[in-house]
Image (tube, rainbow over all chains, first blue to last red):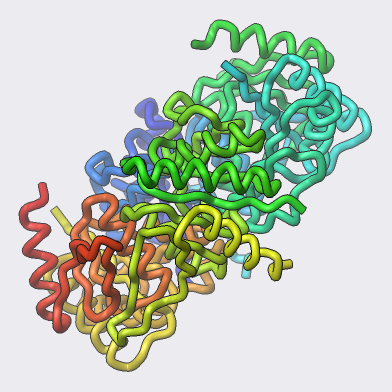
Length: 159
Length: 159
Length: 159
Length: 159
């Protein structure tokens, strides 16, 4: 069984986040996973680039209706035309999620993953707690290798 | 122009949250707003009940395909059949959002609202900050009346 | 139990189709049904106008993300932002469908209704048969009153 | 530029339709196209099988939320969780459509393709005309090779 892992993060990312995304994409591809992204730039494009360079398959699910807006390095680009509702497809098509950096769009994807019981590993990104002071369950990783290792470990126990 | 306000919150809510949701729904209806919800129980059902009791219109956008899963007190119940992607419709159909209590589904809606530039007021609920320590922009209110007042104030400046 | 009936038809309609749509909207409202439409002009707007004039509730599910594109006379306008995927919501939210006139968009809705077992009545519109010569099941009506009568008759036997 | 072609048809298909679908999938893959399907059985599965056997890439967009319902031979399977609204994604992700055999679901996809200006070639399947007697524009092909040749010819003139 091939695993599908979504790599989510902002379209506007800094150099450190882009390097992390490329590394995560490459490590996931090397582990035999299909890499899912939102199909646009920044962290999404870098993850696809990393997967592609490692000989893997990157799939982009775009919010708009036009494939020409897709980032390079995607083996398959699906222009969903669903707007922000496509975030639910990126997450719902994945067995697990790795979040790199933070943005509101990214947070919506992390929250949907948690909502639907999918494991999420965050590199940087978000600190979320409720008003009773309980930090909610999101694995934190210090780098790309740890993030991939943590996530794949969690996926092993999923049927 | 009639305003549409989404009231979002968990299906499993405590008595305080339910009372807040009823009050918010009633105040929004009294102010002439249409109250949008996710169409199920808990905070969603209580907001619809409050709007209905005040003579207003509550609209539910359900995740499943079957209208019989809708809460009572909805003037209109739309079984979207979109699963969690319906969260984007609840937010995208609203001019602004009031969040009561916290859950991952609620957080996804708050994040989508912020992502798309819609004002959000939170009663209780979430504390979200990024790793650089910056709390992100979400108005906090102490009760129902303040939440409605804050949100409607923000909507006045929206065309 | 309140019935939801979708009235589907082209945005570019002739005077006869518009008059039929207004009459159908009014008759459905008088029978206590909520009238669902795609929220735009032509047959959609005329059905909403007829429902509204009869004191009923018309709901529009728009393809775009902007409520300002909604037709008048809608009690509730939901900008789904789903593009043509909203056709599935119009049909999926309805207990039955009345089609007035023909267009490819209308045909997609009629086909989705048949696909999901919802009764469809067509006034004018389409003649569809497969290559083996079998005309497929779509009730045909000569006018607004017959269409509403036929559809409500079929809905009576649906739980 | 790689072309994406949707092969649509019923999940319950006869042997002739399945053979046609395999051949169409293979010819499209040989021509360098990505083959899109609805991800389930019958014509969808056969088209994927043909593409895969020819060394191509078949992508399935499933209506349900569970990848385990996907047919074999798909390089990428996306469980959209959108129900029948996924038909709009199958079509909207394609540059053109080949329909094999007929069903209401297939007809909804053919209609959506025509609605959005995408070329459609039909093998067998539907005869659609409006009440004024005008048959609507759908290219008909006698076999797999002619269908692929006709569609790719139409796509050459699309930017």
